[in-house]
Length: 248
Length: 267
Image 1 (cartoon, one colour):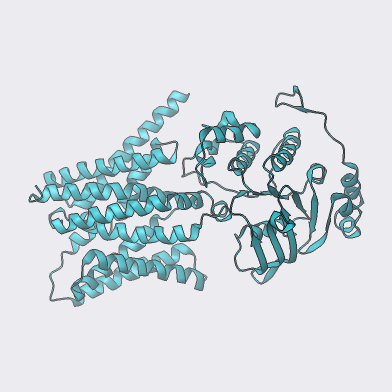
Image 2: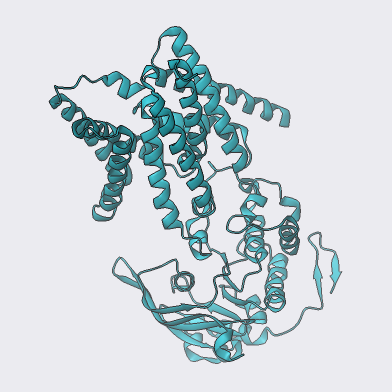
């Protein structure tokens, strides 16, 4: 198999403008099978916009998007469910795909929310809802996962566990992941490639390279650069929800 | 069997209730009740065109309502007016133009009340065919677009990102709305069609915790409303549309008590 065949989505000099203002411009990146590409950047730097361009949600764009898969799982940054619609977690899990019950259970178990399966979506907490969103995206075993701030509202230990889960999923399913996060600490342990955005690609490369980059330092400060390069240790244990230590 | 006008009305009403149930759910979920009203108001224009050109009424209404829906989409893109103002503009202007046009058609005797509020005496055997074939087609198409339509109702971007083509589903749904109005106008009347779409659904919302249940309860609510409404229409000599919608309202009120009960049980 050539390298070409491993590419799932490729953005070539894409840009998007809204109300005559460019949200992003000249962004090129690609996501390959089994790789995690992380978009970082300050608020309003066009991270979500770039993801939406890659997904084909924004249509009047500049540049080209080439997609080599239709099996995509997406966790949007903002999602508001209208409560005029009665929807249980399991109904939501079947939203875009017809999946078997045991497949749903598996995904919900992975993100730790299987007990919420019959609950109404409106009764979930922010963190629980986020875990359901992630479970829904991975349940269909996608080739490409696009995760826009997937752990927002999740408690700190849960956050680490979920990032590790994301890493595990990319290995197990051999899928490509486009991840958006503002959390420099946790992201860097899992990422293969970092793209730092600020309306355009300000720098990109491996986490280490980006941390050393001067433009990155200018954008996030010296402190961030240090955390980025320092944070490269492995966890040897994890905690279950009640604080009990689980052996790996 | 279909010789009796009441049997015809009943069979027609059952056919309509089966289609309005699931469509009504989407009207409520997607907040389209005023949109439904606008299409229904424009149906009057469709009726006058049908009479002028001696054309099939249901087909004429279907085409007119679809055109109004198309104009709405264009206006939304071209003007800076909010959606509800545009809907009001189209609803009332098409109603007004329809009424003015009727004024000019002095050579035909019109039963305006029948058009506005429905008339069970008016349902012919041909209408039954229109309703049942039309209704079956509506349900079939709705079943085919269910997944993308439902997914985009929950979240447009998820549906678009995961390749479900929500725009096409939305366009087809709009056509279904025009179709349901076209087939139910004789029974329910153009002022009350939206009531038939949303009141049984509102009742169903009070009783359901998931979408499938809501669709089923919505159909059952519609059927009960048709039965109760038509029998009382016959008994008290009231127009059929208001009788059906009033029956639906009574069911809705009962469903509120059910909510109260469950809340008490939980406490």
